[in-house]
Image 1 (cartoon, rainbow, N blue to C red):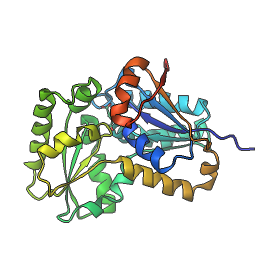
Image 2: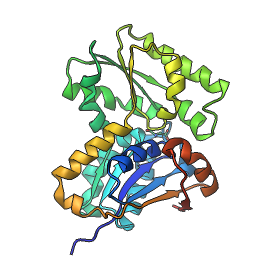
Image 3: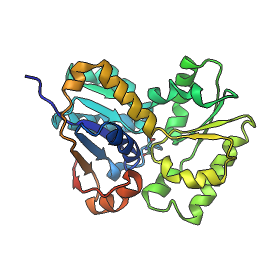
Image 4: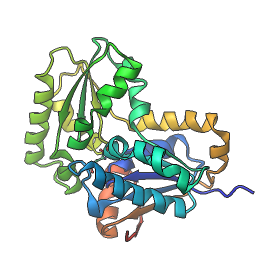
Length: 274
Ligand code: DGL
């Protein structure tokens, strides 16, 4: 008898909620377990080793809760920890377990959104310095030119509820301008951080309307749907009662107060000490 458990969705903090929102809308039949490692966010400025250790700890916790499938709904964790976990840890943690990230689902279809073949990527310092996006995009689309800009202040602004402040305007404009100065032909900008969709309105103020701005939630949700249809054994291990549980490593009060901005609905979280 196969034991089933919720689909796990992980982020350093709130950002993964923008992905869970889309996934749970597209696939409402499944159970989900969300963990935001808010106590240790942001991950974007941390070393490979630290991001890997933190992410692995959270993945192990999900597996102990009975999850078979973990989505790292965090670009930084996907860029800096996913491959090592898949290659070095997964076989020890369970042959029937899977960990997926958000970079591949996005890069494999990015070509649909550009006519000029010039794509801009905005992300955390960790994601940008890892070069994961240019490398992965060029595997699928060798002719696409990728321009990158790291926005180290954006996640702290968002995590600290300052994303509507004039300070946020300054930093959003600064990084968007710096990206656009790298090429006049960018016609598609990828928000390669799951926190950034909450800045969408601000970002739009500083970008010509002819440029496509791509956020990942809906893309990851569609890709998960395809994955589950192609992997029936994993799909069978996903429980289906339509429940969503939320955990945070920091204050549940803060989490519940702030999460609706990302998830679009009220949430009631529990605390996890790691
Ligand atoms: N949402 C995470 C991402 O997609 C934010 C990383 C951070 O904590 O800095 O990269």
